[in-house]
Length: 325
View 1 (spheres, rainbow, N blue to C red):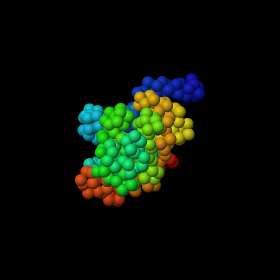
View 2 (spheres, rainbow, N blue to C red; view 1 turned 180 degrees about the vertical axis):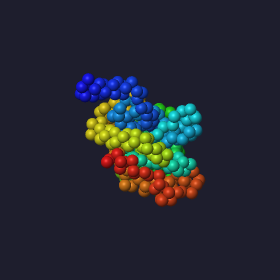
View 3 (cartoon, rainbow, N blue to C red; view 1 turned 90 degrees about the vertical axis):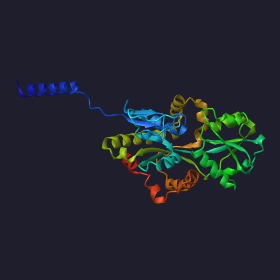
């Protein structure tokens, strides 16, 4: 047998051995977020951009990152359930959960939600000041309630000057359509649905610069310290950056994906799209927003607000930097 023949046979044997050997198994990256909200859209599309099975996306939020923490639906991760690696949520929930879990890290702002108040003219509302004494539907302890607080503050009102109607269930916003509330302040697409439902009776308030929701991708410090998980997170963030570009400049597919996952009508999603910005970056004023909002939350939760230096530790820009490289 010639040297060339032996080399060819060796290559063939090695190829057969490689094919027979079990593939290296890597646990998929587990990502959660509430699929009903439009802010999560790029997170769903980013999973499509990576190899099949490498990312699992499910419903949940920041509390899902720790075992035993209850979600809004009352479920809690059990000892047998794998914990997610990443969670999408607004900055309000990051502030709330990081009181007990200072190892939480904000690694990327996926979406900025431009909130607005939709009210009924027939309730005597033509100006923001007319909200005094009115019933306003919102979701307590969320970015929506903080937005309402900032809007009321803008015209010298406080939450004590209005009656808060807590939103519950996927059709909770109907309280404005059926007259049980006079206005609504919450994330899209409900404001658009209510605006369309009220028709000429609708009045809209949207004060630019007062506040916008900052919907972030969150992780724990332990996840980011794991080399293999970190590699997966960086790859996912890199795909997210591409997905944010799609959501901004070629949104049709992203809107379809959201419709399939949320159950919202795709036209309603498209009509609400311009109330979102998809930066996939870390805003320069993120810490300023956290400091301002922390004061509001601390008052509600009857605790001392954390200082700027402590809140700054919640932001980890290193993953974004790696993804960009």
